[in-house]
Image (cartoon, rainbow, N blue to C red; front, side, top):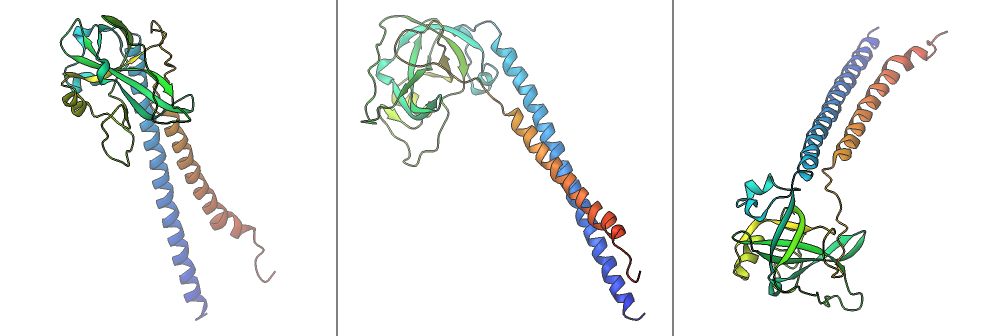
Amino acid sequence: MSQAAPSGGRAGRRALIVLFATVLGVLATGRLGIWQLDRAAQKEALQQSVDSRSVLPALAASSLAETPSQAIGQYDRAVDVRGTWVASATVFLDNRQMNGRPGFVVVTPLKLSDAMGTVLVQRGWTPRDTQDRTRVPSLPEASGIVVVKGHIAPPPLRLYDFGGAVVGVIRQNLELEAFGREFALELKPLSIIQDADGAPNDGLLRQWSRPDVGIQKHYGYAFQWFALCALMSGLYVWFQIVSPRLRPQRGR
Protein backbone atom coordinates (compact mmCIF):
# COMPACT_ATOMS: atom_id res chain seq x y z
CA MET A 1 0.00 0.00 0.00
CA SER A 2 2.86 2.38 0.80
CA GLN A 3 4.34 1.96 -2.73
CA ALA A 4 1.04 2.07 -4.65
CA ALA A 5 0.10 5.53 -3.49
CA PRO A 6 3.15 7.35 -4.88
CA SER A 7 2.84 5.39 -8.14
CA GLY A 8 -0.80 6.33 -8.40
CA GLY A 9 0.05 9.95 -7.65
CA ARG A 10 2.62 10.08 -10.43
CA ALA A 11 0.14 8.51 -12.86
CA GLY A 12 -2.44 11.08 -11.88
CA ARG A 13 0.00 13.95 -12.45
CA ARG A 14 0.97 12.54 -15.84
CA ALA A 15 -2.68 12.27 -16.78
CA LEU A 16 -3.27 15.90 -15.81
CA ILE A 17 -0.22 17.03 -17.78
CA VAL A 18 -1.38 15.10 -20.86
CA LEU A 19 -4.87 16.53 -20.48
CA PHE A 20 -3.56 20.08 -20.10
CA ALA A 21 -1.23 19.75 -23.12
CA THR A 22 -4.00 18.27 -25.24
CA VAL A 23 -6.50 20.98 -24.32
CA LEU A 24 -3.89 23.67 -24.99
CA GLY A 25 -2.98 22.14 -28.35
CA VAL A 26 -6.62 21.70 -29.39
CA LEU A 27 -7.45 25.30 -28.47
CA ALA A 28 -4.37 26.66 -30.27
CA THR A 29 -4.84 24.70 -33.49
CA GLY A 30 -8.58 25.33 -33.50
CA ARG A 31 -7.99 29.06 -33.09
CA LEU A 32 -5.42 29.07 -35.87
CA GLY A 33 -7.88 27.27 -38.13
CA ILE A 34 -10.56 29.87 -37.39
CA TRP A 35 -8.04 32.64 -38.03
CA GLN A 36 -7.24 31.17 -41.45
CA LEU A 37 -10.97 31.05 -42.26
CA ASP A 38 -11.21 34.72 -41.28
CA ARG A 39 -8.30 35.51 -43.59
CA ALA A 40 -10.02 33.60 -46.38
CA ALA A 41 -13.19 35.64 -45.82
CA GLN A 42 -11.16 38.85 -46.02
CA LYS A 43 -9.51 37.69 -49.23
CA GLU A 44 -12.90 36.77 -50.70
CA ALA A 45 -14.10 40.31 -50.01
CA LEU A 46 -10.93 41.63 -51.64
CA GLN A 47 -11.46 39.37 -54.66
CA GLN A 48 -15.04 40.60 -55.00
CA SER A 49 -13.73 44.17 -54.90
CA VAL A 50 -11.18 43.35 -57.62
CA ASP A 51 -13.85 41.70 -59.77
CA SER A 52 -16.26 44.60 -59.34
CA ARG A 53 -13.63 47.18 -60.31
CA SER A 54 -12.60 45.19 -63.39
CA VAL A 55 -16.07 45.54 -64.95
CA LEU A 56 -16.43 49.29 -64.36
CA PRO A 57 -16.21 51.66 -67.35
CA ALA A 58 -12.71 52.50 -68.52
CA LEU A 59 -11.01 55.44 -66.82
CA ALA A 60 -9.76 58.37 -68.84
CA ALA A 61 -6.29 59.82 -68.41
CA SER A 62 -7.68 62.83 -66.56
CA SER A 63 -9.05 60.52 -63.85
CA LEU A 64 -5.79 58.73 -63.07
CA ALA A 65 -4.71 58.90 -59.44
CA GLU A 66 -2.24 61.51 -58.30
CA THR A 67 -1.32 59.89 -54.98
CA PRO A 68 -0.50 56.29 -53.97
CA SER A 69 -3.57 56.10 -51.73
CA GLN A 70 -5.83 57.13 -54.61
CA ALA A 71 -4.10 54.64 -56.89
CA ILE A 72 -5.00 51.70 -54.64
CA GLY A 73 -8.68 52.33 -55.28
CA GLN A 74 -8.10 52.27 -59.05
CA TYR A 75 -6.19 48.99 -59.30
CA ASP A 76 -7.73 46.57 -61.83
CA ARG A 77 -9.86 49.31 -63.41
CA ALA A 78 -9.90 49.36 -67.18
CA VAL A 79 -8.18 52.39 -68.67
CA ASP A 80 -8.05 54.02 -72.09
CA VAL A 81 -5.33 56.65 -72.59
CA ARG A 82 -3.61 58.48 -75.41
CA GLY A 83 -0.07 59.76 -75.55
CA THR A 84 3.41 59.45 -76.99
CA TRP A 85 6.00 56.86 -76.04
CA VAL A 86 9.13 58.02 -74.27
CA ALA A 87 11.14 55.43 -76.19
CA SER A 88 14.48 56.51 -74.76
CA ALA A 89 13.29 55.38 -71.31
CA THR A 90 12.24 51.85 -72.34
CA VAL A 91 13.60 49.20 -69.96
CA PHE A 92 13.48 45.41 -69.89
CA LEU A 93 12.71 43.98 -66.45
CA ASP A 94 14.61 40.72 -66.11
CA ASN A 95 13.59 37.40 -64.52
CA ARG A 96 9.90 37.81 -65.29
CA GLN A 97 7.91 34.77 -66.33
CA MET A 98 4.96 34.24 -68.59
CA ASN A 99 3.47 30.78 -69.06
CA GLY A 100 6.39 29.36 -67.07
CA ARG A 101 9.06 30.79 -69.40
CA PRO A 102 11.76 33.27 -68.25
CA GLY A 103 12.12 36.54 -70.03
CA PHE A 104 11.58 40.28 -69.81
CA VAL A 105 8.63 42.56 -69.19
CA VAL A 106 8.98 45.60 -71.41
CA VAL A 107 8.18 48.88 -69.68
CA THR A 108 7.92 52.22 -71.46
CA PRO A 109 6.65 55.55 -70.11
CA LEU A 110 3.75 57.12 -71.97
CA LYS A 111 3.54 60.91 -71.96
CA LEU A 112 -0.17 61.60 -71.67
CA SER A 113 -1.92 63.76 -74.24
CA ASP A 114 -5.19 64.25 -72.37
CA ALA A 115 -3.72 64.99 -68.95
CA MET A 116 -0.63 66.22 -67.22
CA GLY A 117 2.13 63.76 -66.43
CA THR A 118 3.44 60.41 -67.61
CA VAL A 119 2.45 56.86 -66.78
CA LEU A 120 4.48 53.67 -66.91
CA VAL A 121 3.07 51.06 -69.29
CA GLN A 122 3.90 47.39 -68.92
CA ARG A 123 3.65 46.74 -72.62
CA GLY A 124 4.18 43.01 -72.76
CA TRP A 125 6.59 40.12 -72.36
CA THR A 126 9.42 38.87 -74.52
CA PRO A 127 11.58 35.75 -74.06
CA ARG A 128 15.24 35.95 -73.14
CA ASP A 129 17.83 35.26 -75.83
CA THR A 130 19.27 31.85 -74.94
CA GLN A 131 22.60 32.62 -76.62
CA ASP A 132 23.13 36.12 -75.26
CA ARG A 133 21.14 37.15 -72.20
CA THR A 134 22.19 40.78 -72.67
CA ARG A 135 20.52 40.95 -76.08
CA VAL A 136 17.04 42.46 -76.20
CA PRO A 137 14.70 42.70 -79.19
CA SER A 138 14.27 45.93 -81.07
CA LEU A 139 10.71 47.16 -80.80
CA PRO A 140 8.86 48.94 -83.57
CA GLU A 141 8.20 52.27 -81.90
CA ALA A 142 5.10 54.05 -83.10
CA SER A 143 5.65 57.73 -83.80
CA GLY A 144 3.07 60.30 -82.81
CA ILE A 145 -0.02 59.65 -80.71
CA VAL A 146 -0.81 56.08 -79.69
CA VAL A 147 -3.82 54.67 -77.88
CA VAL A 148 -3.18 52.29 -74.98
CA LYS A 149 -5.96 50.13 -73.60
CA GLY A 150 -5.31 48.11 -70.50
CA HIS A 151 -5.94 47.97 -66.78
CA ILE A 152 -4.41 49.81 -63.86
CA ALA A 153 -1.91 48.01 -61.66
CA PRO A 154 0.70 48.84 -59.04
CA PRO A 155 4.17 49.74 -60.28
CA PRO A 156 6.10 46.68 -61.56
CA LEU A 157 6.55 44.00 -58.92
CA ARG A 158 9.88 44.22 -57.13
CA LEU A 159 12.04 41.09 -57.09
CA TYR A 160 14.93 40.41 -54.77
CA ASP A 161 18.07 41.90 -56.26
CA PHE A 162 21.41 40.46 -55.15
CA GLY A 163 23.38 43.01 -57.15
CA GLY A 164 21.64 46.14 -55.96
CA ALA A 165 20.29 48.94 -58.14
CA VAL A 166 21.26 48.72 -61.81
CA VAL A 167 20.98 51.49 -64.38
CA GLY A 168 20.62 50.40 -67.98
CA VAL A 169 18.26 48.89 -70.50
CA ILE A 170 18.08 45.57 -68.61
CA ARG A 171 17.14 45.88 -64.96
CA GLN A 172 15.98 43.61 -62.19
CA ASN A 173 13.70 46.22 -60.62
CA LEU A 174 12.35 49.67 -61.23
CA GLU A 175 11.85 52.19 -58.43
CA LEU A 176 9.18 54.64 -59.50
CA GLU A 177 10.56 57.81 -57.91
CA ALA A 178 14.18 57.10 -58.86
CA PHE A 179 13.16 56.22 -62.41
CA GLY A 180 11.23 59.47 -62.72
CA ARG A 181 14.23 61.48 -61.55
CA GLU A 182 16.55 59.59 -63.90
CA PHE A 183 14.55 60.55 -66.99
CA ALA A 184 13.07 63.79 -65.66
CA LEU A 185 9.52 62.44 -65.83
CA GLU A 186 6.51 63.29 -63.68
CA LEU A 187 5.20 59.76 -63.19
CA LYS A 188 1.78 58.74 -61.94
CA PRO A 189 1.90 56.50 -58.80
CA LEU A 190 0.73 53.44 -60.74
CA SER A 191 1.27 51.57 -63.96
CA ILE A 192 -0.87 50.39 -66.86
CA ILE A 193 -0.74 46.78 -68.04
CA GLN A 194 -1.48 46.87 -71.76
CA ASP A 195 -4.13 44.39 -72.85
CA ALA A 196 -3.80 42.21 -75.93
CA ASP A 197 -7.09 43.55 -77.30
CA GLY A 198 -6.27 46.52 -79.51
CA ALA A 199 -2.49 46.24 -78.99
CA PRO A 200 -0.16 46.58 -81.98
CA ASN A 201 1.56 43.60 -83.59
CA ASP A 202 4.93 44.25 -82.00
CA GLY A 203 5.91 40.67 -81.07
CA LEU A 204 5.20 41.07 -77.35
CA LEU A 205 3.07 38.55 -75.50
CA ARG A 206 0.26 39.89 -73.34
CA GLN A 207 -1.11 36.74 -71.73
CA TRP A 208 -1.31 38.33 -68.31
CA SER A 209 -2.45 36.13 -65.45
CA ARG A 210 -5.59 37.07 -63.59
CA PRO A 211 -4.97 38.62 -60.16
CA ASP A 212 -5.10 35.96 -57.47
CA VAL A 213 -5.45 37.08 -53.85
CA GLY A 214 -4.74 33.58 -52.52
CA ILE A 215 -8.10 32.48 -51.10
CA GLN A 216 -7.52 28.75 -51.57
CA LYS A 217 -4.21 28.97 -49.71
CA HIS A 218 -5.99 30.03 -46.52
CA TYR A 219 -8.59 27.28 -46.85
CA GLY A 220 -5.73 24.79 -47.19
CA TYR A 221 -4.04 26.12 -44.06
CA ALA A 222 -7.34 26.03 -42.17
CA PHE A 223 -7.85 22.39 -43.16
CA GLN A 224 -4.38 21.51 -41.89
CA TRP A 225 -4.93 23.21 -38.52
CA PHE A 226 -8.35 21.62 -38.02
CA ALA A 227 -6.96 18.21 -39.04
CA LEU A 228 -4.19 18.57 -36.45
CA CYS A 229 -6.78 19.62 -33.87
CA ALA A 230 -8.87 16.54 -34.64
CA LEU A 231 -5.79 14.31 -34.56
CA MET A 232 -4.77 15.48 -31.09
CA SER A 233 -8.31 15.03 -29.82
CA GLY A 234 -8.55 11.55 -31.30
CA LEU A 235 -5.19 10.44 -29.92
CA TYR A 236 -6.12 11.63 -26.45
CA VAL A 237 -9.48 9.85 -26.50
CA TRP A 238 -7.89 6.63 -27.77
CA PHE A 239 -4.83 6.44 -25.50
CA GLN A 240 -6.31 8.00 -22.37
CA ILE A 241 -9.89 6.75 -22.41
CA VAL A 242 -10.59 3.95 -24.88
CA SER A 243 -7.35 1.95 -24.82
CA PRO A 244 -7.11 1.59 -21.00
CA ARG A 245 -10.64 0.21 -20.88
CA LEU A 246 -9.87 -2.35 -23.56
CA ARG A 247 -6.88 -3.79 -21.73
CA PRO A 248 -7.64 -6.94 -19.75
CA GLN A 249 -7.53 -6.23 -16.06
CA ARG A 250 -4.50 -7.73 -14.33
CA GLY A 251 -5.06 -10.71 -12.18
CA ARG A 252 -7.86 -12.20 -14.23
